[in-house]
Length: 268
Image (tube, rainbow, N blue to C red; front, side):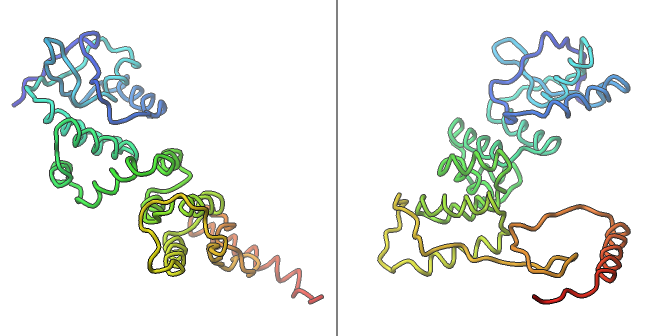
């Protein structure tokens, strides 16, 4: 049974490397409100570094406890090497407040560069597949603009992963703008990239050249039928609204009744 002891918050130090680069203050506030009512139920993990105590797992709880006005917090002190501490941190972050894809990539890179871990070793340590680790590292190391778009939320990780397969950076940006401005499903993006690759000559260079995008290559348009007016709408212009099944049926019935009142359209 681990020895749990209360340690003053003032005697604890945040780690040098924190996986979460940006923490939502609303989450900290919500946790602090819970702590005010029931306290810190799960101790944080700390270790000695240069005779001082460093937080290994529990930085969010530490911040929330401080916001809640606590003076001390329950802790478990463990003897950990740097590599062990970083792996525990990563498990903690994945379990509690999911790291975004960019923070995951940066953490994988830190494990590789600081501890010399291979992608296979990182994969085994964090319970993710080797391709998953490799793709996240590639996002950070190969295209900072794509990484920034994923961080901002204007691109999904899946879109960025597909865009990385386009070696010509200018063409990649061309497709990226379409994804960000109009939206694109993964299947549609794959179709654009396949069309682009099929139009490339067999002897075209495979490296990341910076030639202008091919003006003949415009992403093909894809349409869906509007449930209200039955007209085709370009997929990038579709608006998604979340309804429960009951409200969805009620709205469709109301639209149907309104269309019945208006009668059929008279062609010009």
